[in-house]
Structure formats: C-alpha cells, structure tokens
Length: 447
Image (cartoon, rainbow, N blue to C red):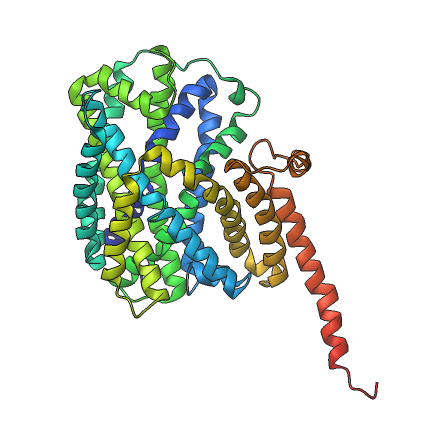
C-alpha cells in the first residue's frame, strides 16, 4: 500500500498543529492551571481529551468523507448540508475566527507597548492591514502552504514557546496553588468541558480539507490511505498540542504563587515580564502573532476553497481577496464587538457539530440511518438554538425553566441527552414504522 515519506508526514503534522494552535489555545491552559491548582493533572487530562482528541477525530472523519463537511451534512438533508456548511465557514472565517485572530495578535503583541492615551484604533488599522496583506500573500498559492507554514513558521513558534515556558518554570519556585471551587469535586469533567471552548472542533471541519489536499499533493493515494496518513499527521499535531497545553498550563499553576489573574493572557504577560522583562513581553508578542497568523492563513484558505467549490464560476483567488478584505474590515470593529455578535452563533453550531462528528464516526454501527442523524441533530439543535438566543439576550422563562431540568445543562451539555433520545427515536421510527409502510406499499393489490 502507498504511503507518504516520513518527512512529508512530519511536515503535514506540523502544519496541522500550526493551523489549530491559535491565540485561544494559549490563553485557556494557563488559566486552567491557576484555577485547578493541586488538581491540575486530572483537569488537564480532561482538557486534552476535548481540546486535542475531538478536533483530531473531526479531521479524521472529514478525511473519511469523499466531499468533506457537505457529505456529512447531507446525511441529515442536502439543504441542511448547504446551510450548515456555509454557516460554519462564515463563522470561523470572515465573520469571527479570522478577525479575532488579528485582534488577539494586536492586543498581546502591540497594544501593551502603546501609550494609554495613544490612538489605538489607528494602530489597529495599520497592524491589520499588514497582517492581512501577509495572510493574502501566503494563501495565493495553497500548494506551497505546507512548506511555508509547516517548515518555516511552526518551528519558530515552538521554539519561542519552549524558551518562554522552560525559563519561566525553572525560575518560578512556586508550587501548584489552591484549588478553585469548580475544580474541587470533578476536576476531570470540568477540564473536559473547558477543552471544547477552544472551538477547534468547528475549525477542524475546515482544516480537514487542507490536510487532505496536502496529502494528495505529496502523493496520489486511495481514500483508505488518505485516512491513514491523515491519522498519522493528526497524531503528530496532537503530541505537539498536548505538550504545549501541559507546559503552559503548568506555568499558570506555578504563577499562582505570584498572584491571582483574571485570564490566561494576563498570566502569560506577567510571566514573560517577570522572567525576561520587556524582551519577554516581545517574545510573548512573537508567540501570539505567529499563532494567530497561521490560524488566519488556514481559515482564509479553507473558506476560499469551500466557496470556490460551491460557486465554481468565481475563482479561488477572488474569494481569497474578498474574505481577506471582509476580515480586515470586521477586525477593526474591535475584539469585544466581534465576540458579542458571534458567540451566540457559535453556541448554536458547536453542539450540532459534535453530534455530526460522533455520528459520522459511528455511522457503520447503525448503517447510516438518516433517521438517527435527523433525530439527534434536530433535538440537539433545538437546545443549542435556545441557548444561542439566550446568549443574545432573547429568553423565554418557560423554556428556561424546562431546560434547567435537563441533566448537565448547567455545565453546558444540556443538549447531550436530547440528542441521544432523538437519535434513538429516529432509528426506531425508520426501523419499524417506515420499513412496515414500505413493505405494505410493495404488496400486490390481489393480496
């Protein structure tokens, strides 16, 4: 059977790591470390399961599907596939994910060095113009994306992270701090729930196309071989992500001896300042900027490829330019405004995405029953839509009181039981009711 060279597999694995590793991946682990304290290890294990395992499972599922996200969505309904796919790409692309990457890079690499009375909006405009000009240049030739991201940017990113984290851990004498209330009883479950807040599972629906294209560019392989090579690259990316999460999380746990911080970004900034002074803050800015840049490149390329395939009369380069310009304009609205508008949409999409990925992976066990897909996605979607509206400020007291009675609703998993019941109901309906109706309609009139 055909396979890629080890060097090619390593390069694609590093590329996948770079695509996943955005600013949010740097911010969440240190805050978990501070909050989990002495319960750091079980909490981090839970975080890794969902922050690493679920996104990589999504990439593998995409590699198993001939037409990627649209094929998976079509298992519910063809129209659903179009609407869901477009919503995913627009949300993680120009409407939220890409502008957020540029904003976070600015907030942590440029803004700390600006005077309080300075014109931050003008500097944001200058920064984003340069940022997106470089993103557009890299995305112009996707065949060279593996070499540019995997071979050049990723090693620099990893080296910068290792230098900051190792120096900080050895210089800080503090042991793990006190355990916060939410990590006291069930640290693994809490870490598990925190892990999918990185939103990497949704992003993996887009990144899967880039990985498959990179594998096929290196060598033409059959579908089963593409899945195998994607899994190998995914394991490399997973090892890298796990290493970063654990080490940066330990840094957050040890920083508890210095003080209590409001978020992971502040923890990293204070650690860099404490260990290296101003040069440390510059190093942190380099880490964040590279992480955000690689994520933005992946999202622009994936979104452009998707819409170019959906509307073949418009070229990939045209979509790349349009998405880059839209992202530039939205980025200048400011980070808080972008999040306030987009988070409700992500709250709706994330449970539906998880349900689709899990069902696609287990597809052969229920023979691809459309009833299972429809039942599970519909019920999970009902709960997630209500949650999204609530996040947007629209709430019904009657619905709110009903949803609160659902298991795990307070933890953000209220959609889980309805999805399970909906899937079983859909399977039973298709298995018993529809099968009998079809058999009855096929009986000869004489009978």
